[in-house]
Length: 373
Image (cartoon, rainbow, N blue to C red; front, side, top):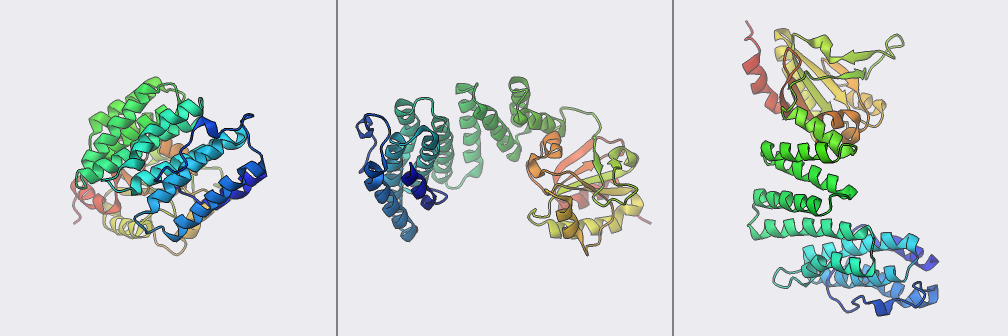
């Protein structure tokens, strides 16, 4: 299907949606299930035309209608496409319905209703497609945005609703890979709202029901971070700056037992990291003589990126390296949701505080370190 592949890149990243002049039906499918290039040409031309209309009118209140029409056409295109292309086209159609639902007037919720009905339509005409569950999850996201608007911008209400919908999704689809991700997102949402009890229940559910999933490993780390495991913090990583003699040497956090330690997780692209480093240098100058140590854990893809960022900056402490960012082993071990952030570790190695910014450390350190003379 060369014509299909030629057109698809012109669609762009996100699709929106609205009217239904070209509603999908089984009658649109050729007898053999796959159309040739000549049969598809009018459909592809119309999709290109709509894509151009969306680009030219992206600020128009009516743009959702172009998106909706485009999404419906994508369903028709998927029905007439080869299997290897079909899933990608269906996901673009889902994204289109999602965008239309977000943009359509709330007093005229036709696109939102279409998005709600989409999983059932996909299950009827494309049974077994992975796009069915993708459509369910996109509808949940749109629903949460709708709740946020209807509540007058009450983010807490919207996020609690997100938790409920995600957990409901996991209960209804316990055997799909998306279930673990949904519970992890619900747990992280609950934690961001300060509901650590609900977050812990979700993390524990992940550990017990999805033991072999990466989300369960992150959940186990989050449980440790939230105080469900009182073992000392373990951190053994290579130095960011290593000499020829120390190239294979590892820094072990146990070396700093007896001192109050700040473990600062960061990447060179972390938002606000430059200002955080300035604050950490001030804290070091003030408290290093009173028992403070700072361990900087760089999580860039390559250690050279971290070293380049630090070039010319004054710091005092230990610099170590663990690649992978929020997908790396360190983020997984401690259930990190974002960087930069700091952990405060007691003299015996147990975690005192987590998810701290550099500016929040001042009060924590002042209350735990002896006053200077």
